[in-house]
Image (cartoon, rainbow, N blue to C red; front, top):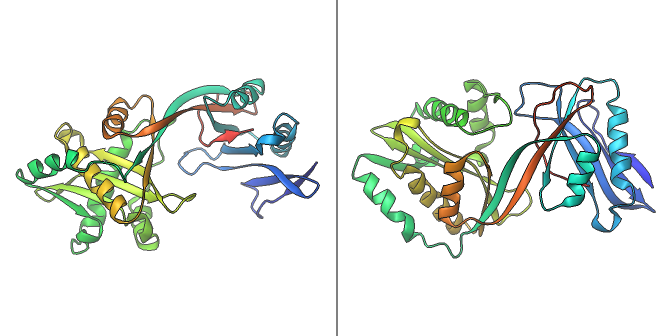
Length: 294
């Protein structure tokens, strides 16, 4: 078996592909974690083709990663699906510790009954609420700052493995200007011109028929009024009308309200993922983020 270095020039990230007789049988690597405040935390990637598991491919890739990072003060972090016993054994045998659990589920938009959620929008409209897409806010010169303030507030209430690295307003506004595709399925709830809730769906990189529910949040003072259900109506309606048959979502187990909302909407095919981490310098580790299937 041969390990081929597939890394870009920068040393902050590295990746390798495992080949057997010219055929790729696995890959591994690491990269910085975008949302982490600490550069010493690295996201671990490791995958082995099913029929090649148990033959040392994953071990060789992992050993190559550890050897490359030898002497560095870093924390490796990874997710493993709880029904993949081989993944759990692989990580635990190498000293990784479990830290947090999340649910992953999906909604079939083609069979969803939108009339279930229409009542929330109708009722809230009578009380001065408006529900608009990002494009419909184009004429509001204050929209970028208002959306940013709302985004930062709700993001701080979403459970996270560690304190979040919140974006600056300048970075947020630059993303709006340079990556408009990220805001095409961005829905806002306003109450008397105050931005009070958001739902952000993103294109899924693996399939053109799926959207990923990135953020759903309501200002603390406005919760419990059905705003999340009204925004969910907008998101599901958008997905269906634009040919997206699936919406997928992740929710930390500790986020009971969002988990309950997803259940009530009919998100199914739930899988549970466990968050693992390991300090290569034997220091106290924090937590992790990516999926690993050795």
